[in-house]
Length: 363
Image 1 (cartoon, rainbow, N blue to C red):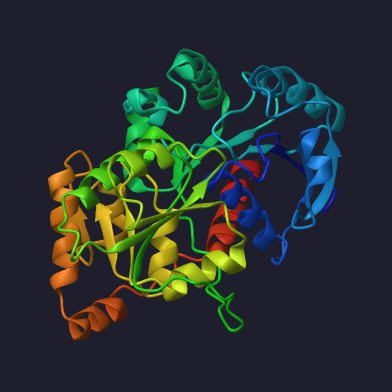
Image 2 (cartoon, helix red, strand yellow):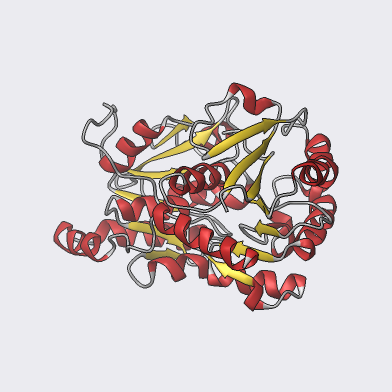
């Protein structure tokens, strides 16, 4: 059975796509440590040749598709991937980044991370692409034999939007990376809130900054926001609000440094309008208090042990931060104990459950 090929669509992987790249890399890195009966073969972009892909548990075919070019990527998903599949005749195709072929004669497993382009299209990174992404995802969803998503809430959204039976959608939770700080990277920051992610609209950085602005400067906490690229669009906002002394903007930082930032933070804040719980899991992994938007996916993961706010209300954001600041250190220590990551939020479990879904499709 080892000859059974599972073709993995790696066209989206660039190390620059935030949570999607974290998911792809950690999923297959941990699959490689398990006992499986498949022969994994990756179908990657032209740019991937320059990346360290040693985490993938099999050979990789590098195509001429340029994933940074959206037209090229779309052609790759619709035409090149199915053509390659016909050559190698896989028992299964896994597309882990929201999009996949319109049609294949081979069973396809599609991971859909959220319904941003459908339920919150006004928050999409590029609203001009909304019709195209909807068109591509609609066909990819209906071509799929089964769908994986990361929360029960997201499963219901996908089922409603695409008229897919809930029985054909598997909920597989994501995980935090290992909280190894045995040899921490030295950082020059202390007494701060930590936030991170790309600068897309749905991350709600403007709302967070407006909330911080409402807090009296004498008690306003320093906040570090990672994940920017040069030029960082938040610089102008921070300057216009007069928050230069209170907000530190950092680029994407290496994993070891990010671990140190989590380890040394006072709390983690996630202001997202839509599903974005990887930073939240990382905070839980380090036992840090959470100040987060009260969206259903967040409550599904954290329950009642967090400081919640309405992401569309700067006043609510400010009030949640102030509520956190008023809690005694003794109570926060107790909260940290209760907020420890559950066993099911591990990449090993994500890998085990994903393999189980694959096996259920192949039969």
